Amino acid sequence: MHIETLKVFCDLVDTGSFSVAAAQNFVTQSAVSQQIRTLETRYGRKLVERAKRRVRPTPAGEIFYEISKDIVSRYHDLEGRLQAFANIVAGTVRVATVHSVGLYEFSEELKRYVKAYPNVNVRLEYKKSNQIYEDVLAGTLDVGVIAYPSKRPQVKLIPFREDRLVMICNPSHALAKLRSVSIRKLDGQNFVGFEKDIPTHKAIERAFQKHNLRVHYVAEVDNIEVIKRIVEVGTGISIAPEPAVRPEVRNKSLVAVPFNDETFVRQLGIIHKEGRHFSPAAEKFIEMLTTEPDGATKAGEQS
Image (cartoon, rainbow, N blue to C red):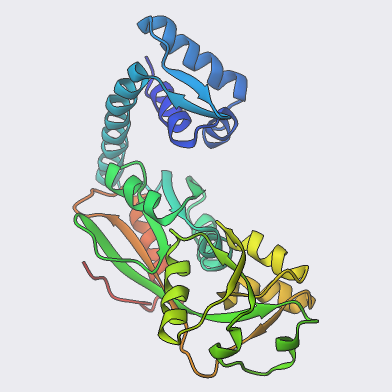
């Protein structure tokens, strides 16, 4: 049995999708199906099943997944140690973040990294923050980049940057005419928000409670792109990271208005498992995120 087959199986369980697992491993969907059938034939057990359009492990699959995940993690650690010994910057760096960060917050750093280390494959995934913490601790991710990072056991935190949150609306909205806005103006407005378990939603709700405000949620979604599309058609207003709405502001499909009585700053952080032995590729990736193009350090590390 090949390590690659175990990795494909773990990716299938993690994503719940044959097509996504295939894309992550640069193979066809039929190749993933064939590898799973081979495993099931070898062990005489059904390992996965479809449930509500998502692939889930069977009880036997759960056991196989748990052990396989540990084997794959140890194999990646072995590769990293050998590469470090040979001082080779190659292999795969597994990174996860949320949409608003990955699409708009470190694209320039990612471009610099790929150009500097062409032999490294950066595997970038988009997940919710809680899942990123879990995968970092499980060893299936090298690095996570998240918003509103919190200290957790066995997790190392490196401050990344801060960005400003602004009110966004359709250009025809009454608030679009303002150069700055009081948060109190949002009271009673139709509002498009993030889902309740997303850290940005919790931060916005704390601000609303502080000012004793209530908005009418017309939608709660899981990523910034959907929020922007809903606001663009005039369904409601929202609060979003300023870097994430720059393209729409330039195209005049959205208006971004800063707050004049509430400081909305979203902290971003880089997380990894404490004590993890990184490959040179992963070490260079973190170094790229935490230094400016001229070599100056962006932020210090904290635990």
